[in-house]
Image 1 (cartoon, rainbow, N blue to C red):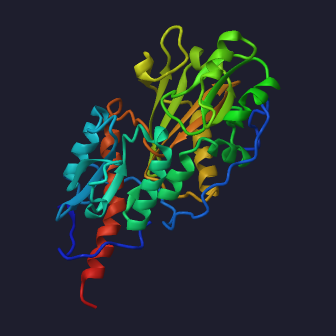
Image 2 (image 1 turned 120 degrees about the horizontal axis):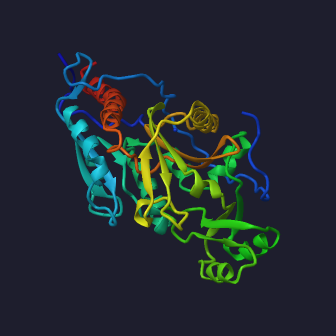
Image 3 (image 1 turned 90 degrees about the vertical axis):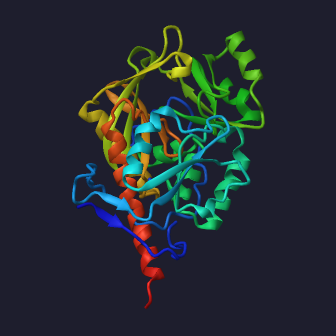
Length: 364
């Protein structure tokens, strides 16, 4: 018989609920780590453990009454992405009813939902100030959200890579420069580089070229100067060998894909012609991804429901390119069991929320 998590109909919102040695490449000048958000998540460290994913299991969690989940999306992707279809079906089996809600829609009653799950907020970097204000609103409402808000804020600016490097994580060499200082920063470098805003996604305002090349200089001149930028060496391994994406749910490794760009391109995103193939990583690649998550925990972000770790193998070792804690494409369709595992982990996470509310609503 399935476990049924129920609560009194007049429960109140829970106000207590609030992700190796130093080997990183130094061929580019390092910048001091940016100031991480001061307030850490109050949640206890999540202990990875396997959960029941089969509805026939006696340990399978079902919410009764159903739990209302706001699936946080955006104007550019107002409906759940087809890759999330399996997740929504799996959540429904747990009694978790997910409905898409556009983060920038002022009419949304966020407090009217039991929990929030950030998915396709794929325009946040173009409306960053507004997005941070939305974070603040969710924080003030004390809405349970995956992932925790302090982690999302920290992860929203790619200067977190410098925080990881300070923890000894092997990252792709990264330098930071303000838009007005970009030309001066590049003047001291050489070779082929990639320049991207520190708050960005999907190769937005990202340029690649060889320093000193006229076409590259022209592309740089067109970049908005009010933004902050990261400068990284172009790694031919991305084109030759591919970029790894490893998925973890609740701290448990799920699956991985190897992404490769289209012929003549360097961008691995599918809308640029790239492809992603389900591929099992070698042990050293998986170990490096786990070390990166250990570093995130050491920085104070110990609790996360999901994360995608992106990296490229250079000289036999994985160098971290990005950690995606906000709105990663999860490649669930490539590995269908992952959707059930993720849903079970979310049900477990929120079962404690429902239990605490039921306890609060019961007579003393």
